Image (cartoon, rainbow, N blue to C red; front, side):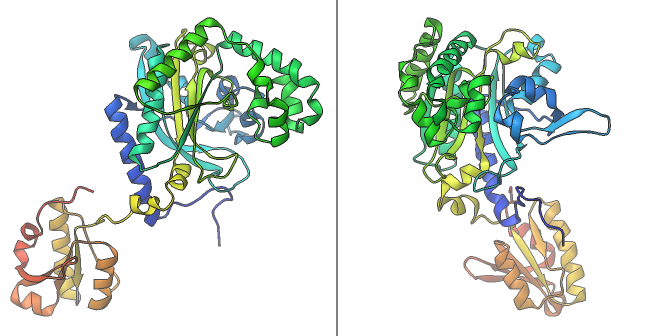
Length: 422
């Protein structure tokens, strides 16, 4: 029997309502903040991610699902959402018609990592990109937007950490200084970080291994690499977060695993997730990515939240967030062939009136059909048998109060009441 591919996961019907509520709550927040949805393909040219994320990052080196297609093109399943959106922004010439765009997305991402809790090879993200402004207020809004979504989904006790990476020149200074400072401590570094130190020293900061963290400890605090402009920008971001009463911690280890980030970077973590993989969401500013991809010099900032990790962070509250609603308004329990045919017609009348409903298709007993009605969380059960057909009346049962009343078959639709808007 075929099985789901390792690292992938089926989202079964009992789980889907939770996902839908998270997505719905997120859309409401995006609408509140003036963001519009964009949808990009799951498959892109590999060069897009090599150029944007960085050829020496772990994502490109180890984690992308990349292959050559039948047209001999090098393509990859998207490992993140920002680069495809910037590609679409430039390809559609949005920078020429309306440079400032506030966009959001929901969708699957793919990384060939070792599967574990909250870290699947196909995972799902909710994210936003504000493209076209260097204003520090955008940094603060993006962080506030992410926090509002978490709050709307009932996620509590998360921790926001922020850091200032500086501009492109600042990052070069930091890289040179790190390389010099860590050369004498090279023996303490893991094999990956020894390679990173030679090629891209900033990636050492992102390592979660204790030995590498110990080698870095104290080094970052003593490095002065930020220019005045970047210091001022970050001070403004912090002041705006204070105005919004958003709590944060300053953390020099927050650098993110993508090379395009500049200035403000941030990460939201939660204690319900495993150490080293406790990030629920993250993001930052990327002021050079648009121009690096062939567009104009435009500032931008964004974030992404992992839906699987959001559900883990909800803990016990996740089941309440996704369950309990009435999936359908009415369930028709029909006994006998003639009753089933009449019930099938009533089913169509109810749906034409916008009322969500269902019925039995397995010739179950009345008792079994009532169990199905209860399991479906229907508000009403409409019972039809030979006796009801003869009298021209169905029994309408309120599934919550157990009260029953007889209703003429032609009046079923009007008796059920307000249409369901699920």
